[in-house]
Length: 239
Picture 1: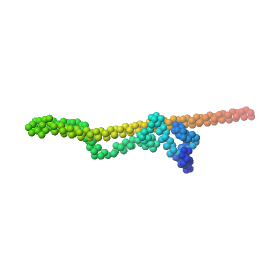
Picture 2: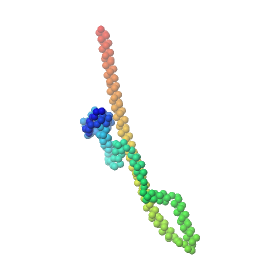
Picture 3: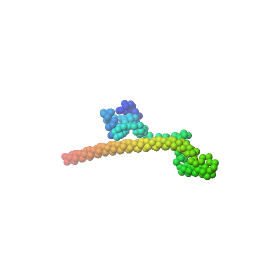
Picture 4: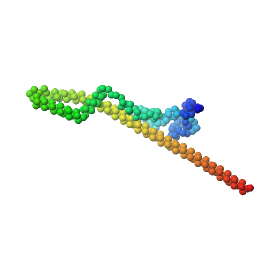
């Protein structure tokens, strides 16, 4: 199989890796013409160069609409250009094993926010009060106003609060990552749908043009047949 040169890069490629400019959708071709005004519908463009300009074209769309291109949007454009799934990164991020401190913080936060903890703690406080007020009334180790119990409660609250905040921070990080990935997926879907619409419009215009050319050829053929028939009739009359 012979090789042909790419109009943009000037490198030689196999014919299967090249596409005719007239098969490229009009919006993308117009974008390429900004850098190569002399491009025609007969030239060949490599898939490699087309991928680069497709990425630049998507970047220009986002910049025109939002005025800026951040890191997430660049990742989405690269995923589209490389035909990758954005959602794969989310699965990889969730599969990371947390360390011992993170697992402990999650368990403490889960237990501290449950009815089991409330019932257990309320029962413990009630037993503490009954033990020091009634059962050991004369020899209570923590008589009223239960200073030792207040000290223990203060220590538990002082330790529990930062542990719960650690768990909440991890959860907020996960929620923020999920929001970012949702945005990436939605943006990727929107861009691909727009590209799909452009491809469909290009195919319809291309097909319509082919049909018009075919119709014109049929009209020319009918006119030739009619002219030939008229000439045959005229020659018969002359004979």
